[in-house]
Amino acid sequence: MTVKQWVEERRKEVAKVKALEATSMSDTPMTKPSEAPKPIETGLNIHEELTLLHRLYTPITGLSKHGYATEIPTEKEIESAKQGIEMAKGWEVCDRCKTRFQVFPGRREEDGALTSGGKCTYHFGKPYLQERPPNEPKAKRVKKYRCCGESMGDSAGCTQAENHVFKISEVKRLAAILNFEKTPENLARVSDRPVCIDGEMGYTVYGLELIRLTATSWPDGEPLFDVLVRPMGPILDLNSRYSGVWPKHMAEALPWSVSAPDDKNGKLRIVESPAAARTLLFSHLSPATPLIGHGLENDLNATRMIHPIIIDTALLYPHKAGLPYRNGLKMLMQTHLNRHIQVVVDGKMDGHDSKEDANAAGDLVRFALAKEWSKMQMYGWVVKDGEFKPPLSKEPRPGALTGPKTMVDSPIKILSDTTIGRKRSREEMEADVEDGEVERGLDED
Image 1 (cartoon, helix red, strand yellow):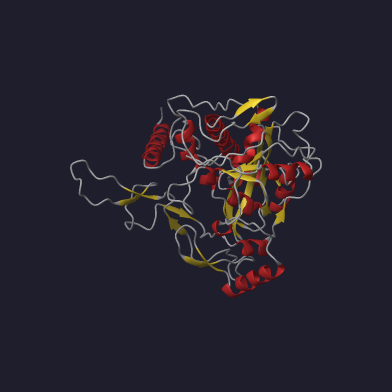
Image 2 (tube, one colour):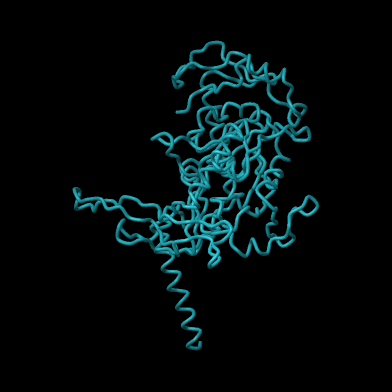
């Protein structure tokens, strides 16, 4: 071995050790779990699962204050947002270091810069309270960053980026860049089959934009599409640590088309805009299609769409402190299914896997459905003659858990091969409302 080779190997070893030290202080799992993942057994076939899925739908009424767009902003609201943007003269607050800076969508005349304020120094890990030493039960708990282990206030940050970045949350301001659309009718769509989605975002001069969109079918998790998305504004930072999208991916991606949806080399293809990604997603949906995801308001807002039927696992498994606090997808998978996603391998994580995250949300829905059916059985529900038959009495069986008596009284007809995949008539949907089938039957634990 030459001296040069030894130096190079030593450099790699030191870098690996430092990466492992950093990740040891992170909440990102470093290895696959030693125990086997928990199997999801609902005790139902696919037709029965689809029949009961409506009991898990997320009611979006009242969620606008938590970031969900429930109505398309009006022209008046959009004009008001544009006036506000003009008055702000490009001044924003950095989403990472909280510094005020100016953004120049058309580049600054004197030097062509996209932002002011120079480089951004920040901590990418969230702060946490360090545990007290066992021999000092009254010691003060110090807040530290998970990324580097530094105490809050000791340094401005452990990571540096070329630009400051910002995020837009206000719906009317998002609409001022690209307006929202409601999911249109789609007679060609297999409307009863749910779709799981996950989007990845990067920072541009227009805020946090969609740069990758993935859709899979539920419950089998088969891919429907997985595409990169060219953002509307010049890129400030692809947020690669979390998005998994790197500059070379965007630069080398071939255009997506119906005739060539996949690259032979396994590389993702790219659509020309968030609007094109939305059109692609619409081709797999109708207003009656259940849409599944985690923190769906982020994906829907980035795609600029409003969908009437959603199952958001961030709300299906609510945080004990209530909104706006939410449980992370990674934590929910580890807690309920003993599965680790977004795993660090050899001290390195190249970002989230959109397909993995989309299917993780779908698996959590199946797990919740298994719990829902288990509760229904405790109350005396049975499957018989192609229907879910309610109990003769509203009292739970002996030994069953007690709970609120809000069960539906009418049988629920199980979807069949002739009903799955066709658009339901208005009369059928109105009958469901009259029979109480759209009501969530049993409360969560």
